[in-house]
Length: 318
Image 1 (cartoon, rainbow, N blue to C red):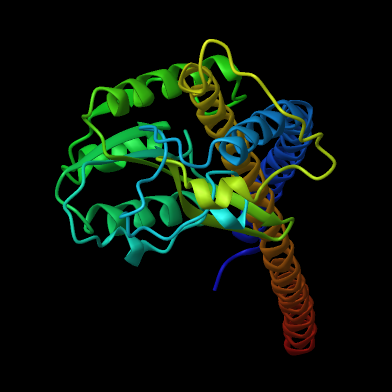
Image 2: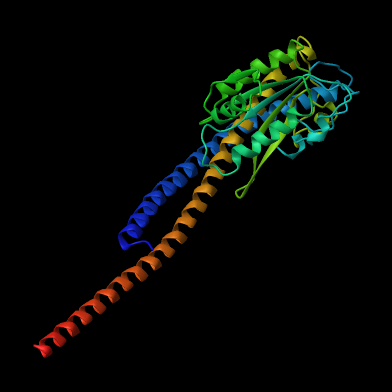
């Protein structure tokens, strides 16, 4: 049985740990609010880009372009935007034709975030099993360490921290990936990241960036947008050459921010759970400490009484 000193040492250790978990909870909460504000500030611009692409398709529905899905494609997914429509089923990656696919994977730089990293990496492995000709682009230190440890080849590693995502990093990633798509080294480009469903639930998702699906884009016109006749100078193809890469950049930026928010949310929940468990352990240890202390007091009283009786008996004999 532990002594009172050992129990006190454990209590002190747990109290110190609680200070750390509480501090990490507060830090994650502040980072989460900042990231959400950043996403809300930039979302209108990229929504307008989506509306511009939709208007071009509505005016020129027969136009063919490498950024658009061909009619014979069998992948049934939605517009690459950060919501439910962009999410695809992993089974949809099983196509009749063997395609060259690129996967941009967003993980975290550190742990202590519950199952956040595990879910992303597990989903990535499932996607990689659906094809043989895959290129893997990894963002986040834990993702890089995981794939190196499991000997899964990476095409490139973006040596960016996932903390405080910004448009510069998103544009670098977008330019690199879109250039591979333009050169024909990729037939499809996907992004695997974590989306925050609500304040209590986050989910790892696979979304397709390229090619875009014309049928869905044509029906995603922003409500209230003025649909007058438009002129595209020098041509619609040239306009798309500039608009679509910016749109992909916006998607990647949104996914980076969503992943960052999900990471902080997961860490907040993990730290809150750790704090709650620490409080339960402290309660049990305090009860145990009181019992040990009470037992020690009782033993001391018993020894004093026994000693007094022995002295009294000895004096009587004398």
